[in-house]
Picture (cartoon, rainbow, N blue to C red):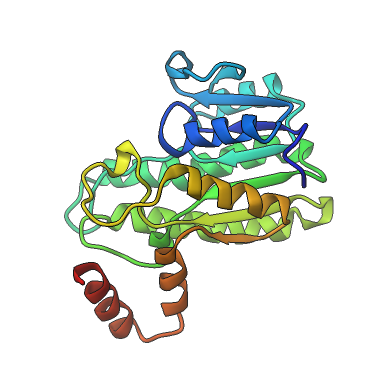
Length: 235
């Protein structure tokens, strides 16, 4: 899969990683970039096609798919982080996380899949697909579900030769993570790894040291995983 000359759609493109995806795609010679957001008036990158898209609204997703019928690469980046836990958190807030990360991503994939034969889908996941933290229960559950979705869709679309790539990362230096005082990776580094992964036909991209470490812990007993994670974050 080549970025140069490709027509690409990016969800959640008005800020953070989404905005960086748009910039990097243009730098790599993408033929057309649809930069989508619930408020496309906030998209400030010249040379793109701004497009309204609320991934939790099936009618909005259908309209975007009709307007961008020439797309061959879809980057599912749109997301939220509410800070809700599962036991004590507001259920409507927890549902918002699942509606966005799981059902929203699935909405987009189902709408665009027919035109993505020999194309590609990249889902922006997280190291928290595999690791829970107090204060991020809803996010962890939703990202774990989106990881499972990514693996299932990869199999379902293999017959039409659609590459489905899962992008895992720790903390990126974006406004969503402004509260976090630990190490953060520059968005351009994360996005470069993701786009390199698409061009190399890779099913999974581990974009930073933290995502690689968490993935390596998966074979361990949960007590080991969380002891090691706590030690790493306090060291």
